[in-house]
Amino acid sequence: MNAPKDGPADVLVLQHTLEDSPGFLGQWLDSQAVSWQVLCAEAGETYPESVSGYRALAVLGGEWGANDERPTLRQAEALIREADSLGIPVIGHCLGGQLIARAFGGRVERLPQPEVGWWPIQSQETDAARTWLGEASEAVVYQWHYDSFVDLPKGAELLATSSTCAHQAFAIGPHLAMQFHIEITPEKIATWLAAPGDVYPPAIHRHPDSVQSPSDMLAATLRHQAGSQALANRIYRQWRSNWR
Image 1 (cartoon, rainbow, N blue to C red):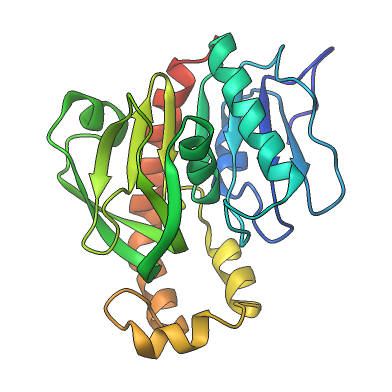
Image 2 (tube, helix red, strand yellow; image 1 turned 135 degrees about the vertical axis):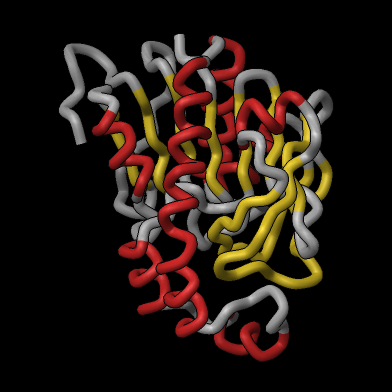
């Protein structure tokens, strides 16, 4: 991580839980030679009262639910709204995308079945979808979620969908909310599989069409990680084009 310059860093990264690190997002920010700061709520680090002075805001995922009554989740939503008022572009990954939805009046709920592993998403045939996701009509991305933004905020534009999750990504103004983990790395997957929680093991057998076993997931990682990082490069470049 680049050390912040005098005053705030270029980018603020909000990390909710210990196991959901910046991953490829941090690698990409370093490759761009921009300064960034990550603050982890579960580690006891305090989110700032304001994002004024930053050029961009990134919000990561985590095993918490967006509707959980946790003060740091509500603070993240307040910072997202402030960023919007200041013209600071926000990018949200999984839980982070759900918090963007909630911050602007959308609704997050538990889905009929979860998505865990590498699964295809289909892009909308719109200019906004092509701007953010490229020309390909389909991409295979990494998922680990049980909830999703089921109602989009007013003014949001749907960018991608899947057979299990109707809303995979949306744009609203300069901001991007994703249900998938474009920041994923093999190291993050290994960390999650080492302590997957109580819901994941039975879900493998209950939903084999949307939840991969560890062995299938690791095999799919070898096939799809490079494509995921190429898509991440495009998404992050578009996000950066909106920075102040």
